[in-house]
Length: 286
Image (tube, rainbow, N blue to C red; front, side):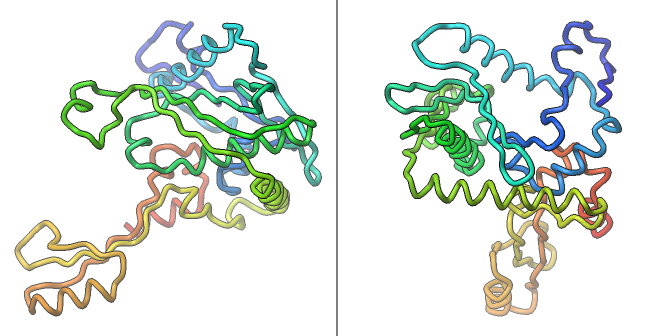
């Protein structure tokens, strides 16, 4: 990956934000398994063709800094331990930020936005935590609980005072218990994902199926009831039939406008978009 420096920032900063390949050939991390298979393959194949600017990588330094600070303080737990297990013809890895062996607790540090908390979707953290728990289990270590401790980099004290729904602290904790049933399900998920990636490695870029809606951070299609001469929607529905019924009841001056799902990750957060047939087609249809 090429890192440009359009703002002529100090070389130390450029080096700090320069990202190395996350996975070795045939090895996939817990966070990689959360990505779409198409993204995983395209990122590996085209890594040397990617170009990012150092200034756009600024948030990566926050996460790195937090982990560097937390791991240097002794608290009786294991810190930054990496686990590696063979799955199918590949390997699955995971580096655990902190593991409390006495209580069977995994702690993971995150830097996140307030939007993440208010949106309330932690499925990626859940999968990551369960993959770590499964990796430790394969190594004979017991995990009964996972805890993600997020530092909210854009938290506002003033908003917290005036909005009860806003996170009231700049630190947010997401946690869950780990059960034997969930560990078994996680093992099955990991195996299926690895086999899917291995099969995709034999395909061309365009032959690989698109990432799922969840993996693309895509909301569902919406159907807006519009009124002639008005720019904003009267109402927005998830189902076409409901929107049509509403428009019909309001009279001939109303009509239904289809609003296709937007893949929020593709445009702004995926390195592979210029090599992705799905993204290119989505752009052509706009």
